[in-house]
Structure formats: structure tokens, C-alpha cells
Image (cartoon, rainbow, N blue to C red; front, side, top):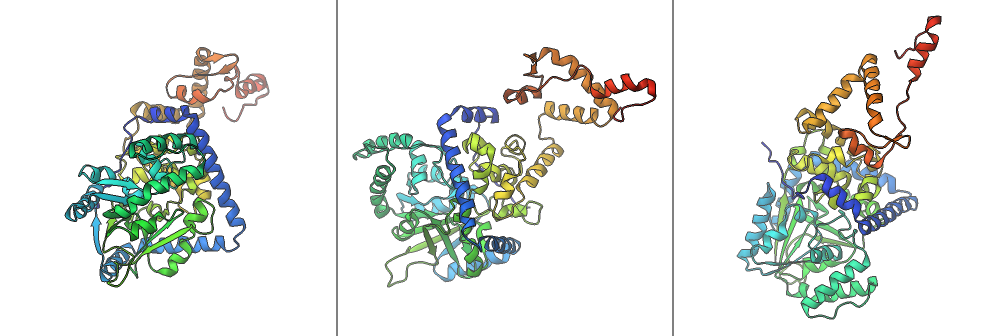
Length: 488
């Protein structure tokens, strides 16, 4: 039996997470601005790139083929890495992955680690696991560095600190500078803040005992880990420390460089609207004896954590996700509540689907029901043609079938469905609602309701039910002529 994955989650109930997000005006303004800008940039880059759509379609096919042949490609990748001096490990669970990395670090006497941005390491909560062993961990991606200083989780798959404005970042950096005995940045100008972060981290790269990366793609035939970044920090993390550990999900596998040729453009084009990311870092083995760059020791931890459970299921295409964030940028719900309200490291439409799937609906099973309007914007935005709306509906159905919905909610919808299944039941419900609305009517509109309707009316009003429906009027006025309203 394939193991169920585990993911970190915010223990607060959905309503608390949602309401806290809606009350955070700075976050909502910043997230809204960032996502709209990135979404527009994506549209613009395709308009100026005639072969962009055909390349995207080919990428989808290459990724689907790799998922179908995952077992064979995984074995080929591991052989290739080990042929080039690296070591590979298969981590069935998040706990296994953390233990593997911790053992490598402790065996080598590692005291300081520098990291690139990695959603996989967020997923397994690697940083707390290493810190608990007395190992210092420094995030080197600017966004990750910011949220590490704030003690927060990423709010966006692609832009971890998208919820923070310049003033908030300056405040964090001023506190960080005082603790480090450095001159604090005196301006919230992005250039000043970036310069401070660069000066702060430069020495960390040189003094680190170990570098840790994620991976955007794994090329099976050469055993290569491919990283794409816009800051260049991955070059330093993979070349300065003597030990390198790459923690990458097994779904990142590709057959060869031809498949990579089209796919390597997709995260940048669909995530930030660039033809290609600023930096592409490729690790294909350890440092040669006469070389000056690359790790002396290279360890690749291949993470399952529930992924292989999705093979040969209706949800298999979820494994094609390239973490571009396009679905987040297009989602109207994400634009309003940001990433933290989802309660998972994976937010937005892909998080709604992936979080319950990887954990067999044991973690945040409410997401498909509460954080989606079924507008299908995510389906239009996804470059990998993942059927996100279809999966959200399927997960809702699965929740009902497995009795994971609240009993009151289940009974309410069952009663409603039963009543509206027949004309007689519909008429009874209208009469009941007409009687009950007198208690919730205000200034000529319905502004509240009982039970589940109370939450619906928090952001809506609606006209009251007519004192006499069309069907009732028709039957009354035309009855003498032998006519009857068809709906009756």
C-alpha cells in the first residue's frame, strides 16, 4: 500500500484564517497588486512569443509521458547521479526526508546551512528539524529570507513575501541589523533593502558547511538537478559549500534534455511573464578532482510523501504541476485572502487540490468546499492543463461519500435536494421560506438567514420572495379557462 503524505497545517479553523486575512488590508492590497501584475505579464509574454503556445502544448505531453513512466525514470535518474559521484535516497514520508538530511548533516559535523527557495523543504518542515539539532539554517532567496526573519510561511508559491510591503520589510531588516551588529537600512527603497540583504548573506555563503536546494526539474538520462531562479543565489548555494543536498519531489522527473528544452521556459513565462528565468543552475555531479566549482559531496533526496498514490488515478495530472503560481495569480479568492488563509504550504487552486490529495483528505479536507467559486480561471491559467475545477468538484463529492462534511451541512443540503427534486417539494419550500423571511427582512431586502444561510448573507443581500409567485398567480387567474402553469 502506498503511503499517505503529511503536510504542515495552520491549526486555526477556516473561519478564523479567512476573517484574519480579510481584515489585513496591507496584505490584501499587496497580494492583489502582485497577482494582477504577474497575471498581466503572463498574457503579454505570450502575445510576443509566436511559438509559446505550441511549446506549452509539447511541454504538457512531455510531462504526462514522464509521469506515466515515473518508476523507470526514477531508477535511471538514480543510476545516473551515482555514476557521477552523487548519492540518492528515496524518502517515502516527510519524516523520512528530514531524518535523511539531518543524518547527513550530523555525520559531517555541519553547523551552518544555506538554502535556496524550496517548496519541498517547506512541505517537510526541514528547517525546524535541522534547527532542533543545533544547526543554523539561512534562507538565501530574498523572499524566503524576509519571511524567515518574520517567522512566517510563504504566502505565494512563487513569491514567498508577496504579502509584505516595503515598509514592513524595512522594519524587519532594521531589527535583523541591530541583532547582527550591522548598520540598519535607513530607507524602504528596494535597492537599499536588496543591498542590505546581499551584504548580510554574502558571508553566510562563504562560511556555510552545507548547501540545500530544491529542484525544478530532474533529467533522468544525465542525473541532473535543474534550478531556475531570478537572483543567482542557487549558483552560490551549489558551488560554495563542500556538501550539497538536493530535496526534490519525484514528480519533477523528465526523460531527457529534449523534454527539458520546452519545459524550462514554462515556470518563468507563466509565473512572472519572462521568456526565461534570469538564472538556470544545473548540478550533474560532484566537483572533479581538478575543478574549482561544485560540491565535494552531493546527496539527492527524492521525496514521495503521498505523490505516488496519485499515479493511475483520476488525479494523476496534478503531478504535472511546475509550481509556476499562475493559478494563484488568476484566482479571485486568492487575490482576496492571500496564501496564509489556506492553512497549507500549498495555497490557491493547486493547494485546494494537492493538500487533501497528498494526505488522503486527512489534512484540511474543507479546502475544496470553502475556498473556490468554481469560476474556472485556474483552468484557463494553468500551463500544464491540470483539471483543477474538475478535481475540486470530485473532492467535494468524495468528502460527502466519506462523510467528512459536518452533519448539519450534510442534512441541510440533503433536505434541500429532496425538496427541489419535485414540483410539490419546491412549492412547499417556497411557502416555508416566505413565512420565515419576515424575521430576516430589513429595508425591503433579505439581509440574513438561518443556519448555513447566515454565512452566505454576510456578504450578500437579495430581494425577498414574492408574496405571490408567477405560478400561483397564473393558476389563480387562468384557472377558469382550464389553463394550468406547467411548473405546478
